[in-house]
Length: 610
Ligand SMILES: Nc1ncnc2c1ncn2[C@@H]1O[C@H](COP(=O)(O)OP(=O)(O)O)[C@@H](O)[C@H]1O
Ligand SMILES: [Mg+2]
Image 1 (tube, rainbow, N blue to C red):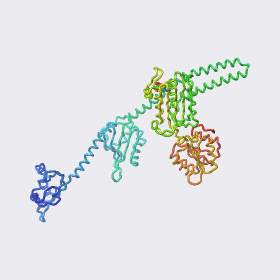
Image 2: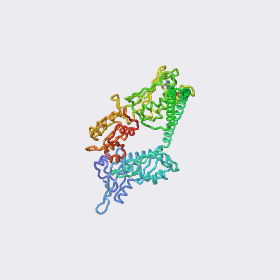
Image 3: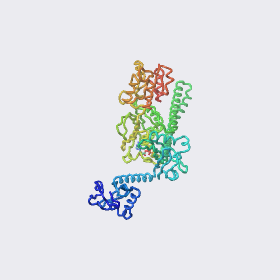
Image 4: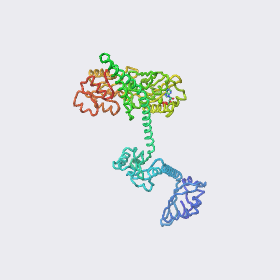
């Protein structure tokens, strides 16, 4: 309590604790001693009492001084106390120490200020807020840089103006906010428009901002200008295509050199046989032999031309499932004429080498590149061996794991010194004379292997030849192919058929066709197997089965979980054949040939009885 002049008349324990004076030290002293010198000089304490006297109450926050001279931030309330006649008898003064509260408030403000400065100053990202309707609420330096608007031009405008007209008409901005509202976040890439009307490729994230009650109070929008990144990527793809094309031209050049020679030989043989034939008109047996010779030579020529055309035509890079046996045969046909006669060309391949998913044009080019190098390394002759083997990798090379096919090109030529070997994959690295090498062959092979999710390795020793190996992952359709066990070249089939006899019969036919059948008698059992063990190459299921899940439902479930796993359904009811909803279906009763046809179509490879 203060008396009407402002002298302390009573003092509680809280006052002692906060201000440090004991009651005996302070009672009778003027309350202005709690104020700072500046405040006293400015007349703050006098004003406070004046106000309380006039208005009955005074409230303020400010610095006050403790007995020991330290300051604290105080919240002060002074009430005027009057007696029943209205005469002022003194003041009740309540002071609270707010130092800590003020400090945390200040810290929060400071953090907010720093954060604002940080966001404001970011120039690589446009970061701004939208109100719940999509109007721009604030704008940072990045937004200004990327989109071209100054804050006062854009705050309050609707964010849809950043979209292209087509997108606006299609309702894209509206859907973006809806998505963010419903799921909390929207992410997309697309064209956006700058203030000057130019477009840029943007990566956009919109986050919904909710208050404690879960109501949306606005959106945070972060936009990045990806134009450059996108262009770099496009250029990279373009240059890869270019490398592929120029490499192909080079390979074609090499091939036609050998082929011209080969064709010359074929034509010589044809002309010779024709000549001899003309002279043997009287000797039907001899004539027959000559005509046969002519036909054989012409057929060989036709075969080579066909390969060459196929190779020249494959312009686009596209992935297909490749059966390596047939594929390597074709490559060899193409290659053989370009390999000098002092080189033995050997192909080694197991009967059960797995299929791979790859771009045939690029793979062919890669093998030709390796073979040309091998040939060039054997000027004195030797053996060029191309082999394909199934390999189970375990972290090497290059961290590869699981089932892979290793394609090896081995020569018995000059080999390489370690310094050369280190650099062979570099683009433009060549040890060949000008005009004989471009140094791009192995770059193509390396790029191809990497892009296919595989690897390329080299082993070599001077004078002992070299081996290049392309590792390629097994075809997705073959995953779970049998390894070293009973070999089945087309992989495992999960048969689902409730009738035991029919199941056995189906399994028998599938074995006949080179598959490894696993029989289950219900969809439920099939699903259990699918989640447990390695995935089969194919599912072959009856539609009508007693109890629980039908074959059609099974097919739908499988497609959802393993979209790449091929499914063939079968039924004896013709009305179901029509209602198979996009799943291939084989009508019962079927026989070996119709089963083989259906499977060939489904797996896009030749399936025939062994
Ligand atoms: N089988 C091989 N035996 C020896 N050296 C090889 C072999 N394959 C590649 N090289 C070396 O690697 C270099 C680069 O090969 P490549 O990229 O195909 O370009 P180029 O064949 O045009 O020189 C060759 O110049 C050669 O020195
Ligand atoms: Mg080369």
